[in-house]
Length: 426
Image (cartoon, rainbow, N blue to C red):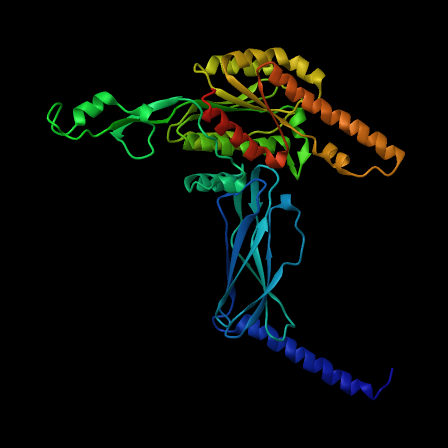
């Protein structure tokens, strides 16, 4: 368009071409140059939790490089971004982490780790494909289970809402005879042992050493989590189904029972019983429970409580604590199930875990500003009242009821187990 600019343009384009060529030579021809990377994560991801993925980028270049890190995460997360840019010092390394929250159990496939190197000029990018593809499994909330186990071991369960319950009555097993210390209950004095341990023997003027009986909590009591896999358990909350929340809570509950030397078992059913893990406390009990919980999926039909009754009657010879995780919204639905539940309650200590409707709770909390809002709140209040009536009906028939929200499910279930155990009400 203007002839005098042509030499300037030629010089500018030539200089740009030289810089691009020099930049490419730095990336491809530098001796010992290149990038390497590694991905580190747990071999089992935890359902519903933020799982940490750790990346390491190592540079062999003799200059500071800017590296764009793009990890090929599993398609289930639908994560589409341009990755993160990190500076890497000359022949140094950089570390970065990100988190993933899986909302479904199963296998997740990671691809390669893509590293795009750039010199300080930043005119050319060179891609390095590192960290070979790998597949990991998403299991029930292992992180939550480990957290509860750690707090239980350090006697700090109150931090997550688990209450201390004072033991009522003397539903304890004999442990040993030991010397009396200040504060022991005098009713526990063992007079025969005291007479035998008196120094100098009877009638010699020796000093009596009081001996007391020591008791411990009853052990080896069966605790069974019964999981309803019917269509009602497909209802979503916070990205997970009600069955997923129940699976996570059941894992923590059964691990807590094993920690208290009780037996832990599992029954999962829909139209028929799909999974049975007999109650026990052998070495491999927890991995067996974890593997069984990993494979559970909700169906599209109503569950058969008759099948559950038959499984409990045939597999559990000892009276057990059975926590049934299910979802019953109406009294009509309860009436259909109540005869079978009463038969189960005659054989075992049954607690039915019900879920509050969190959507209704939100409507009740909203302020009514229009006539339509008043009608909506009235209907919501009626549904919430019916749910509470379902729980009261169960209690009137001698069946324990636990009405809770999905976010409070784990704490409430563990609290109920500890409360029943403390009262010796199995």
